[in-house]
Length: 330
Image 1 (cartoon, rainbow, N blue to C red):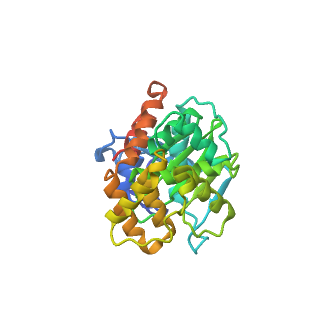
Image 2 (cartoon, rainbow, N blue to C red):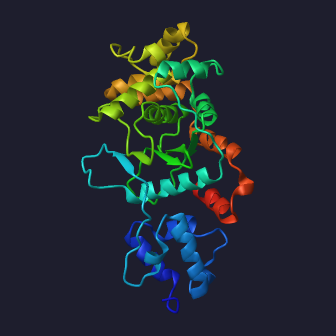
Image 3 (cartoon, one colour):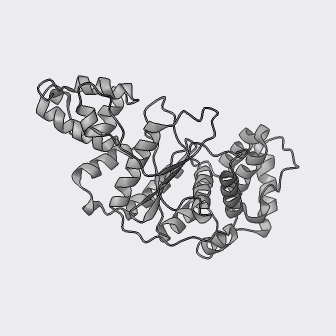
């Protein structure tokens, strides 16, 4: 096999299972790779090793002449589906996210401290240290409790993606967030939802994957995690604006600012998001209000800044450091 091994052969095999050539070049191969190596069997064999490791593939199946590449077996996985076609398992997305979680966990020494099942208690612990429950304060709380959090969205184009994932790795959980909405409050809600899964005991080992997070889920654990999240973020003000109609985002913002004068620990953008959560027809208006309150859309950078501060870069192999730099890059 090695006598005829070339990158063109590998690209064709990988494309058949959802990895386009450009994605493999940018995310599957090390940064030092160049096209001059594509037809050198010994170099391609080394490149195949990198690809298999980074894309969570079985190397033997990748190199086999008449076999499709196979993903490595995952830990026991619980799927939370929100699409009608539940048979469409997002293999590519959760395999890539799982590999990210593995690499992150391998270079972080954390001791997991269980979190309370009562969101009000979690909220009290957060506001004892921070003025508000925000993405930043949630991240600080997670890392203090031995919960690693990473933002990852570098999936191949046209791949069915996931919204969030929890993976137990090295005796502590790793949360992977993947939402395309990068406003801090949107990612704060997703993080609070995943914390709900942990706090309520929905996952104690293996992997839990949310392909989406929606208010109308028929899954009891999803509904319970949603309620955990909204109570954590907006306290007793959950659904407090449900009977009101607003002509524009500024009017909603004015009402929110007035409403939460009695509780400064609530991020007003969280209450704006909460309004859209319960009023689908006004979701665009609620997001307009979120952007009025806080126009920043770099919550993903906040997440990975925390990650960078906690990674033991000296313990990372050169290849894993290169991999993280490529896979978590902008």
